[in-house]
Image (cartoon, rainbow, N blue to C red):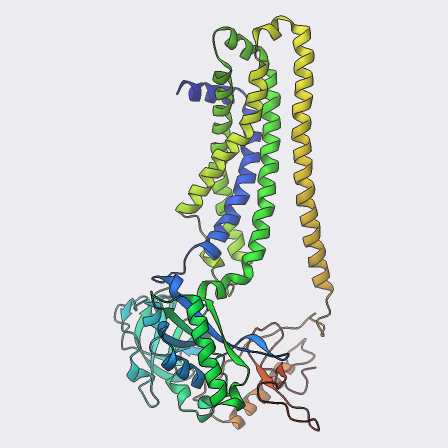
Length: 541
């Protein structure tokens, strides 16, 4: 306690030094806290489901030169997978789609939202019961069943005022009145950001949906049995896929199953980027520590007479070094407190800049683990900042050196120059690494901006339109609507052209199709070339 009180007095005597040191460390530690918060939310924190490490996503993959690694799942293939597998407690289907949500009275404007189309066993696999009401039952998921829906907690609160009597009320989804049977927790975030959950039953009435070669943008999700491993599940599904290829060569030749943990599928593509960011902020942290260590060394050398007197009064070298370490620790902990405030402000900015459909970034916050890591970084910073200056300065604190002032000044001056030189070299080396990484990043960004898009994006605006199937139940009605829409849009001031398409650039929708070039020999099953497909109006180009 005496060391702590003395350290506080020393720091208050030099407010300028204390402020500069605390702010410098706060910036270095704060950057690490902010980025680690993102890494924790995206990569380290388990998915918000019980035993989420058992959740697996299944997709179809096609072998061969025209193949792909992650394609949508055919409904008929899903049924066969589900019946034959023994590694999972069960398998479910899910996909996201756009729907129009409106009130029955027609007084409020329709709202285009994302909906999830799922099989009845979907929530039982996630093991997340509804907050209010009930889950889908098997009787809800057959053709001709009553029209029902589950809604998200957001819709429940914004549209229904969190009414406890929500169950049994009706809601228009794509112009079809549906009975609300339950409210889902905000924890249910797969598929991404969906506000309404509908059964697959409506689609099963369509004969095309039941065609084995028809892929309707679905993914399969399963929960591994406690006794099963991911490798065993992959081997089992490879065997099932090979059997289906023998039984249905026209549609399943070359098709296998991609099996990934749900967490890896959701955020695996961001792992490298976040690793690079962690490396960058680690360099910033080390540069900040080197700066403060240099300041601490200069301040310690300026106090060598005081330290020499204390040594003459009986203080050991360890006593003097410990005192400087305590001072560095206090500065680092103050910097850690300020770093948390900086990180909180930074996270608000990060959440604002990141698109809402990027998974898990919006879950970023300061939790107990982040605070623990920040505390550990602060303690480590205190050691880095204080260790070398403490050793160097305590070594010069001798009565003999101060009694022989001229000699001591020359010796301590040389020591000061050597110590500062090492710190400056470390700072320059870290700064060069950081600047080189920043330069390469900027160069990559500049090159990506120069890649031809194939079109001029200036002045191009897009919008998403979701037509209620109940109202637009024939191709003629759909064509008539879009013709009228385009005609009205073209009349708007400032509009030079307007067109429609089903797959806009960078839309990330799954519209792939195999094709055959007329006049060429037919391809073998499973070897057909596959291309992304877009259906467009005449003025699209």
